[in-house]
Image (cartoon, rainbow, N blue to C red; front, side, top):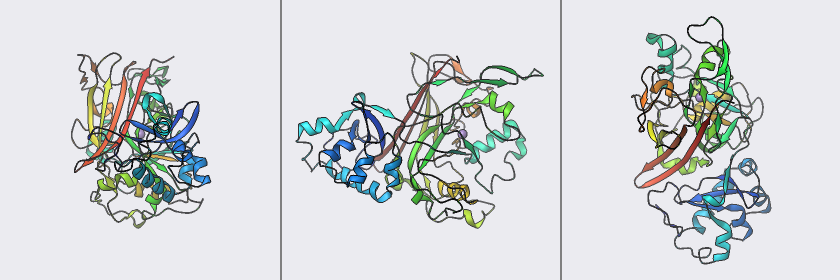
Length: 415
Ligand code: MN
């Protein structure tokens, strides 16, 4: 691990090798920021004081209220900024460290800033790419003997979600209302969802678009991906169950999704690449790929009742993906669909093979038949009002830890 003059624990997931990007409100203004340890660094101020050497076009994007314009400048600009930040804050470089006035203007604590939605999301697509999750859902709702539908092993199944309701960590989530079809009823009722759930997902952010009619190949896909964030794809299972036939998810999903404030670049995650799973049957040529396209990122979900302690309910890993990001993006654009900068694609619920690694309450409690014990003695089948759902992610290897941060949201009662 590289040493920085910003003191932080060796276990911090924000060493000089991470340098993620986010957007914060600082002193009534917005700025693109990064983080080392627990210190938030205002990149706009870093440029203003002459430490970060970037041209006027780049500098202008650093005061925007989203990363979109900065991402649009291309990966070379992002790489240059990360390399410069790593030098400015390296232990051996005392220039900024020894200038107290500049340091006070550039370096802040989390308490000094408000982290904002990092990206203006134009379009959001949710995939369904964990085989174990698709199998679990198929067993519960369809045929246990043929849990996977015939298309699943041939293409990364997905649907178009709602971008407007993606919110940043810390934003409370209001329990949605809608049509519910009780098991013993012959007509639907209107009311608050009783089966509110999370979905543990990762999302990738598009940093480079493609023209309408143009495909992105699996080989080119990662050039188009700026980075990754944690993603909680909130789901109202009762609304979803009644509405989804025949056109798929709608109001049971569109009320909210929550993301972490930090976008971690693929460059920072490069040491954590893994080979893919064997894909049998063989995929069509446009879905074939070369290289290590999966990432080893440990993920966890905790539930914290209001005033209570956190209880761990899931430990999974982003490597539990059958379809990788390159395949998802190649499939998304195989019909010529154009992606725009800021578009977000989520993985689908990331479930591992064992109980304890399932990425939704639906699976963890097997449709509510196996409640989870909380540390305060209560139990959960789904998410209660006043519960805070916390997701965290970290990649670690040989003493290097790269954190994805956390996404944390409290559930408020229905209005
Ligand atoms: Mn989902």
